[in-house]
Length: 136
Image: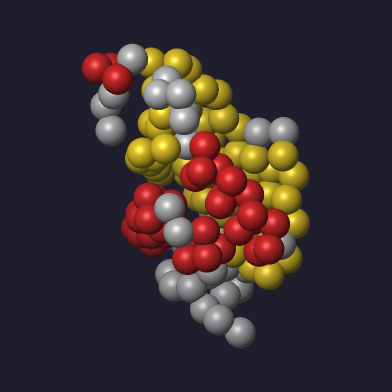
């Protein structure tokens, strides 16, 4: 079984390390690479979309990044417990028509003993912005 360090139980320091690793992975926009941080049967809620397993995660991320162009993400620590981490995030992107957006949200993560994310629950809101108002 693959291990993805740091492993739970998390300290504030290792939770922040895990968050930075997730941010770096998502900013790579590589669905295959990102999927390796999740268990084979990982459960997701992303807005109103429910996913099960790496294959669905990869398909979802491929589609996401084909529509959310010049995507840039920033995650920040919110809280943690033994095997759970909560983050706040924002990301910016533009759609194929050139309209920019900033998305805000919260994620709740639960990890297995090998440090792979078994559950990811994301609540996200998008706000249309002008390109001059970008922060990321």
